[in-house]
Amino acid sequence: MQSVGVGASQMRGLAVLELLGAAGLFVGIWSKPIGVAAGVGLCLYFLGALVVHVRAKHSAKDLTPALIVFLLAVIVTILEFAR
Image 1 (spheres, rainbow, N blue to C red):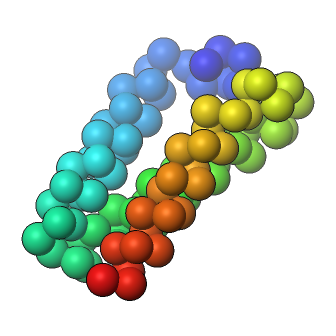
Image 2: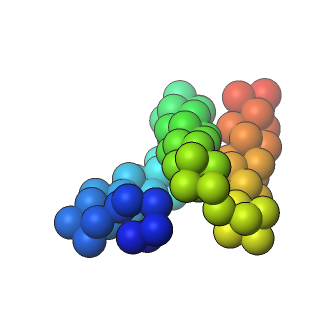
Image 3: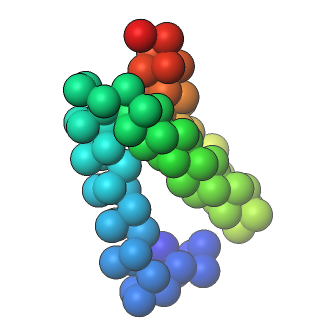
């Protein structure tokens, strides 16, 4: 994460955001608004990750994990919104 300018002190906050998003998707099984909010939050989180990787001029190989998770978050958000 040093290559994109994320320090060790910021890692804890980013990890908490990811865990809250995952928990929100789980709670979203029973509460549609929470699931949609969590999905949107995860989409924004991973869109930010993609932007940071592009700005750091990383290769496609380095972008792929963030891109895949972003696309999964978009799909889950659309499915959650549609139910």
